[in-house]
Image (cartoon, rainbow, N blue to C red; front, side, top):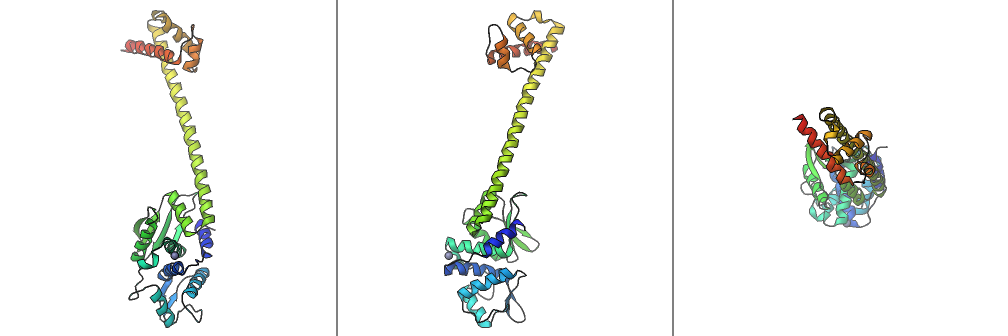
Amino acid sequence: MSFSQDIKKELMGEIPKPRHCIIAELAALTFTLGKWGEKGFYIESENEELKRKFFTLLNKTITISEYDDVLSKEAVEELFEVLKVKDNTFEMNGLLIQQPCCKKAFIRGIFLTSGSVSDPWKGYHFETALSNESLAKSVREVICSFGIDAKMVERKQQTVVYVKESNQIEDLLALMGANVAYLKFENVRIEKEMRNSINRQVNCETANITKTVSAAVRQIEDIRLIEETRGLSSLPKNLQEIAVLRKEHPDMALKDLGNLMDPPVGKSGVNHRLRRIGEIAKSIRN
Ligand SMILES: [Zn+2]
């Protein structure tokens, strides 16, 4: 089962208790699945569970006498009145989603019919794809009202509202009520972050080692150059000493090299002397 299917399975059983929330979620299902056919208004979905959820919410909102895919004329009238539908156009009336609880129920309903979330191992992506642009704008507005940065794009005659930021997808999962999926997503995200930070650390250490090695290689080249041209004896005593030690211990840290000197010299002292050797070598090259 895909990650999206897992989330939907979890959300399918979420039936809000307050009437205002029921109406908000019912609006989401009606506006995305409702169709006008020859026989009248009906719910179009291959997902039986989703249809069942619609009728559960419908039954809690209005009195329906029979469960038929096609709603009776009276039922449609009553439903549309509750959902504040004007001229048979499906636009979300702001009055239905004033409270945060209703906004959450609305997003849940939209996600159930038209949403998906990528497997967090593969990437971070949440989206809803709707053919109704006005409804998509409402979805985006509602998501943004929770401080989540939802973006909108047109794709194959659909308006896609999407979120790419992992923390914000987590917030969305939590506010829709997908608590199991939320925890699963968070675990993956944390594990991925840990792996990344370990990789970064390893890369960083490798870079430092490379830097140390290339510095030592350059120092030894400088010392050899002086040796072959002017001879090490041309150097002042303190530089001679460090030049000999560096040649003997090409991979030793500066601090340890300093300890071998007589008397011992600190890291910055060693560094200073090696820099002077570098300058002398440079003047020979020129
Ligand atoms: Zn509510």
